[in-house]
Image 1 (cartoon, rainbow, N blue to C red):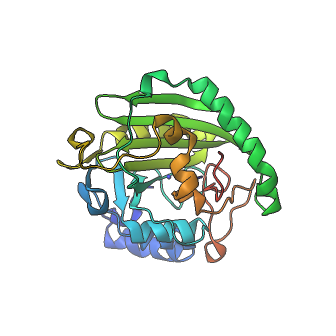
Image 2 (cartoon, rainbow, N blue to C red; image 1 turned 30 degrees about the vertical axis):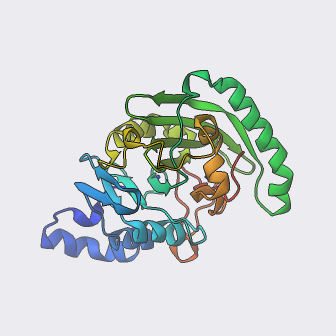
Length: 293
């Protein structure tokens, strides 16, 4: 389906810069991070008709730089079609053990009805997803990708009917990985589509990512006229799925980011920058080319 400290923005004295320059030159990952253009404050997302109002704890990378991170730093194939990436200030992309980021994407399938919100049995949905993951593993292996098992909810799905925002997290087990994987998802419902925010890391990072995702959730909203409440049933297109399918991964299975990115979570491997650096919680990042459902 299946997210950095701002090192270059630090105000350093000329002496310190001179002292650290040789070290930076010897660190290709840090040199790569230094080449990125981080942004803060208010960020427009025109294609989604949405706006980010970033807290001080996050910085934004535009779609071009996010693509560079995904392909050049994390070793995924090109074509993510993301809207950019949110990077926490507290950790650095150059840190192989603690880095994470939130990838943004927009799907314009239409207005997603939340009428089924109160009727969803998330335990039953989880069991269906687990069965789907098991059924898909033979094809994964045939194509050379590791098998994936859904261990359970790391955070049970929650939908806020007031803000029309939903979030949940899954714990995944990937063959060959020394640590379980955390797949943390947020969906923001709009008049014409859904804004996706996704973070993927090691399960040990849940305590750090959970408050970060909560903060990021409050930093994004659709613009006036594109909000969920602006829906006009007489003129607007309605999506062919509801909230349950959203959680189960219907969008990702069809066109989403995770359907395009390569599953590269292999225990203990961290390749050098020239051959793609894969960073996350002591193991490589997982952006699964095949969805888990």
